[in-house]
Image (cartoon, rainbow, N blue to C red):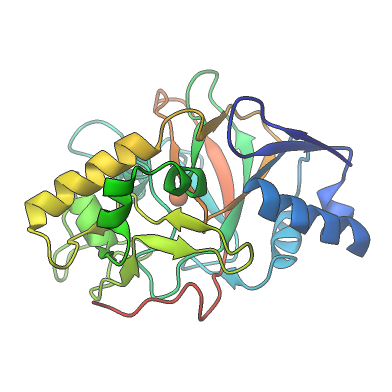
Length: 289
Ligand SMILES: [Fe+2]
């Protein structure tokens, strides 16, 4: 197994010479430590079947089911092969969330238990665009100036998908047909802005598009503050952007990184497969605030 740190960034590694579909226990133990160290592992050319991707994901622990199954498509193509409507005003619900996820976020922070991470693979990729970018919130926390550190320490924010989608004009209403995983969650978890990683002990900034309404701050001030913090935090050298080829697999640590998709020409198909790793029931739990 060959592990190469991604040059010029505070995190991430490219891993070659290992077959994820047939990992030995010794390889797994080494890979897990490597994942905790680097936060993001990229495995080019794995071409896993869906069952193999789920099997690899299970090595990390329980899977967080997003509605229908353990592995879900993140795709602008329907099951019958049609490219989904993307023209202004006719986006379907899947496209609304895909577009929403082009802003920095961590997965499932709007659920009572936020995700541990995800195993993500590419089946069909556009010629241009559609990359995934990741940002290192441990490195961001460690780079904070003392004034901002004093502002974030001991504060929390509410996390809600209804909030983040509504900022795009995609409003969920009672009885609406706007469906989507997490869209009907009405109790927004209150999560500290500084998260302690349960396995590495490192601190990170837990921010991103679902975070809002810091208690004790005026809502608009809170919005401006959080937007500014994301903009500052998600800058080089704390960024890695992965340009996908079919068959690539990545696994990221959602307790440390934010991520987002980059835009592409949505008349072109992009088919990705996502398995979400369920967070620890204690370390990743937050009660509604
Ligand atoms: Fe995501």
